[in-house]
Length: 543
Image (spheres, rainbow, N blue to C red):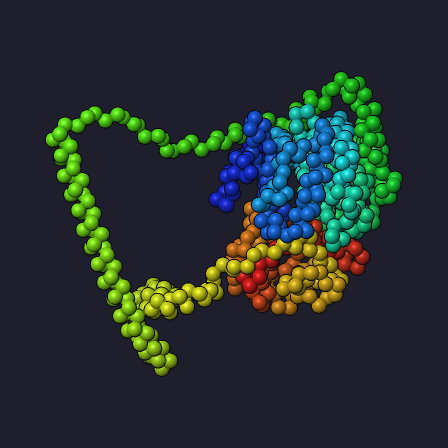
């Protein structure tokens, strides 16, 4: 089945086979926060394991937020959510496990079959609204509700991925005040980095339902620039929606959060329109039609079979006197041979050490003469294909070898530990220095976000910038080294960047930064609060 192939990717060489006792069966996806894998409980129930990126795990602020979200998510219990069943925020790296939902996302289902019929949209809105009741009841605002975060199971929708949610009883903003979410499904207050509440999720519910009914985003296709501008400034055009859905979706999309329907009101409104079908439980038949072919989940990976077996023990028979004498003679010969070999090796060792002591003095003189010869411009001979460092290690004495090996190669991997700076914020009033990544409230930093009539770019006076073009997310320090090798570009147009895009930056000091785009808003640059870039940044110093 095509769905199986697309949903379950084989593990790669850099994927762990085991996470906290969960044996991994396949890779489900990856993003700025980490990778997601398929595994199974001891009883064989499939689960989704999300493993946090190592560089984020080294950041104390991120770990605190991750722990807070895990604790909040543990409180969520709902029929239409993918329940959190296990987690370790203090793990190395941190991870969490939710129940795996064997079904396509709403985005995949609509892409495959087109717009959903009106009854299916009503069932969808009721199920997602009920999930939001459970999520909000636990003190959480999802903040990224969208078609790809709604999975279609055989008995109804499931809302997943609280990875960028916030515990609403702690704060309604991120640490930097950055807007977080997917531009096409943001609410106006979210797009302008305003206060985010439960009503923000209701706006996203209206957009998600409209997508299901239309087969495309309500606010149109195109760049995030124009989409976000329309969300903030224009009333939505609901004329293409089925008449039965317009009143409810209009209430969900009210510009003022206070005017939006509550999740409880959405559930009741949908039940009234579904009538007897709601009371008779007709939803599963609708979902079977919408889901398409059943997804076949890979079986659990068995524990490795031990390759070592116990030796077969047999009771020896008494040996005859002649046999015993023969064995003693063989044992004596073996012992004598072993002793002779040991003496021979000892003698060779002393000979080699003595030769090394003598050659050390000769090599020291030879090294001096060689240096003089090089300085005078005379030619030198070398074995073809031998590297300079290899030749140095061959031709110098023991003391010189120690000195040479202590000097790091300019192409050797950097020894610095990665530093994580989640949700780094760039707009036209601030900037960032790679060597001191704390946000600057001025334009004097080395990395700047610039918007002109031709579009928005990342610019730097001294650092080189490059985009990672790969079908698989998860760029590393080595990836950035390759991307930036020989690069002289100090400007990067952001037209092709989107959520999840990876950008590499290197400053003159050799510091390398990887930016994973979370939100790109490149609307009209003269509109306050609209144009910005939010990214998770990982920094390797002197790399």
